[in-house]
Amino acid sequence: MLAFLAAEPLISLILILVVGLAVGKIKIKGVSLGASAALFVAIGISALNPNIRIPDLIWQLGLALFVYAIGLSAGSQFFHDFKGRGWRLNLYVVVILTIMAGITFGMVKLFRLDSVVGAGMYAGALTSTPGMASIVSALEDIDPTRAEAAVVGYSLVYPGAVVAFILIASIGAIRLKIDHQADARAEGLITDPLEWRIIRINAPRGTIGELIKNTGQPIACTRVISSDGHHRLADPDEALYPGMEILVNGTAKHLSAATQILGEQVVHDIPAEDIDFLRVTVSSPQVVGRTIADIDAYNHGFTIARLRRGDVEMVPRPDDVLHYSDRLRIVAAPQDMRKALKIFGDSERRLADLDLLPFMIGLLCGLALGSIPIPLLGGDTIHLGPGGGPIIAGLIFGALGRTATIPWQIPFHANRTIFSLGSALFLAGVGTRAGAGFRAALTDPESLKYIGLGFLITVLMCIVTAFSCMKLFDLHWDEAMGVAAGVTTNSASLAYLNVQTDTDLGQRGYAAVYPTALVCKIIISHLLVLLLL
Image 1 (cartoon, rainbow, N blue to C red):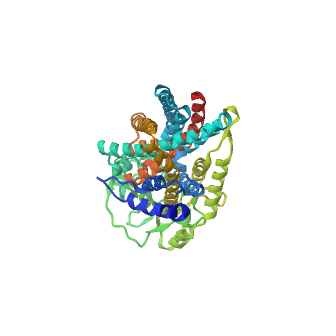
Image 2 (spheres, one colour):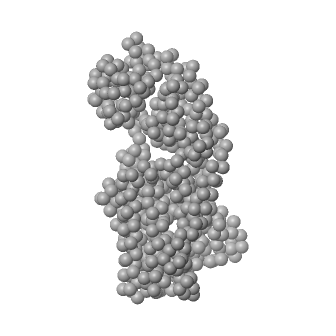
Image 3 (cartoon, rainbow, N blue to C red):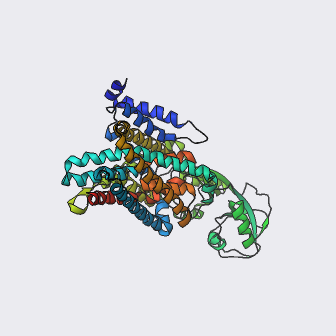
């Protein structure tokens, strides 16, 4: 059977995915491995027969798809956060990676470890394939016969590093009694239900379009109620005046706060013959990537009361960028509804007919970026590879939204599908690379020393990063562990967080530091092996 699987890598791949995804659904005390189980299944099968190996092209493709999808969804938030705490988080990444390199240097000297295997241990403990490649590149010019030792050190430690991260993430969440949903709600990733309220203005403050700025609350005014009970669309440029009655959308908490500032709540029946509302789905490529302000809704005869993206419903802001699959609550006179439908598309069929051309152009740019040689000390060069180039390209294109007539975003459901497929292919493929090293560790007692010390490095990094991020940057546990996953640049760790928390907090922390961590580990790994030799 094992010989058959070694001869049929495609069957092996699907078998690993089937078994891994099935095992990943098993929960023990509420904890499951999710998609990351495919990694351990792959390691186990390839340990039984090292000839069972998925072609590198498969996991490279999976990794590129996985991280590019992350970049697209997180790009806008990444650059927005970088102006605030983002630069501090990335500075922290440089510091913690340097400290971990110092600890590794000390371990190698203290325990008299092989210097090259020890350098590979550092790359493995931080699950940095590009870092390991950087070490190999440095050795090719110094002593090519020792390059394989770095790969051995990496392979021995890599599985334990993934286990260490999962243990810290799961045990920490249990001991700290983390409420994943509550934390995500506090960060605005999960919102309370939206409702509407009529407010009579007693203390005028600016115009309707300035309500968010003047009240400090994320609310949206869609209608103005006249004295005879009829209502009309709210003009953003119309000034508020005493006695004016407006219909406002928001959460109960935000509406109450705004009411205290503006005036008092009143109750009216809202007839549908003047103005009605309808939910529409954004499917038109002409509006995807544009801001709500660009749509100029009022002059087209409607307003946008609410925006729903994925499972999150929010009050729209003028600078919110529209994505495929966004659901909008449109308020308009009955005769103007068709105009709104035409502008936004509202076609599920168009969403299903995914235009892959912009996605592939962006992915191509990312892979091309990853192939550019980056010079290092001593004349060596390294590459960002299929993990680094695509996520940087995804972050850029995700932030841009569109370029001229090209929308870079893809529908939400398509993004999640590509995300899941890519991560599964990556985990299955990279797992078969570590199986041989894991098998060797079982027969060589000396290897256990590297496994144990590498495990300790990962545990230290995760614990220090988690609590540092919580104390220094006021992050919640899930986002702090997302930062730790970003420091490791390990997609398996992120996949576990996504399944375990069922929120996007981990993904947000991961995307915030991934590019910096990737490049930094490549450089530090290269320097570390030179210092150890």
